[in-house]
Image 1 (cartoon, one colour):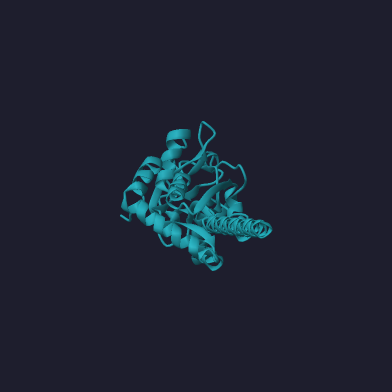
Image 2: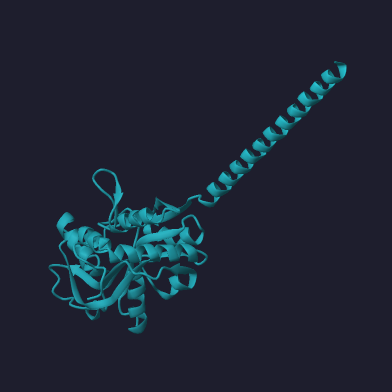
Length: 279
């Protein structure tokens, strides 16, 4: 009996040890699975992209009557955001003159503000490949102005442009080739270009037809475009030079947005016409 009792105790102990081993194995397996899940979750982590834009460009990037940031560039970024689930695009609004510096210091990752290519920008930054807007830049004067019919007629007169804008680059380039014949004035913060032209403090500015049409409609700016186009400009997003992967993804999204007609619809809705194709 003693021997049988001893054998029974031995079997019970062996069974207990076996159960512990099995439980330990299950626990280890669960830990491994949790580790794998966490690893997979880390790989699928969404990357946040800070998009710099403005609030003062009618129909492009502005605050509507409900206090919402909207416009062509803004809604296009939101459409790109829908098509790139691996990224989350978040807006940071600021004055136009601060956009390039904010990108250079990496306070933002991307600029969406009707940015055109020029040599200075190209030396520092990365432009995506797919243009999302194409429009002519023209001289803009008061509707009452009958003297200025082209940029040539601005010799000896004042032309107002935004500092660091592509309009400024166009004016400076023309001036450099023509003996600095135009007095270029750079608009300050909160300065109303329309009022400056209306009151005769300056003769002209440089802008696009869609922007002038909007201003005439909304604030009775009483402006008109004159002369030949100074440039038939293509508009792109600007990124830092180390953002090649993001640039590629944005271009892929833009291609699909163009192909399914969404870009044309956005342009017509916000700009009054399809400015996504060259005439």
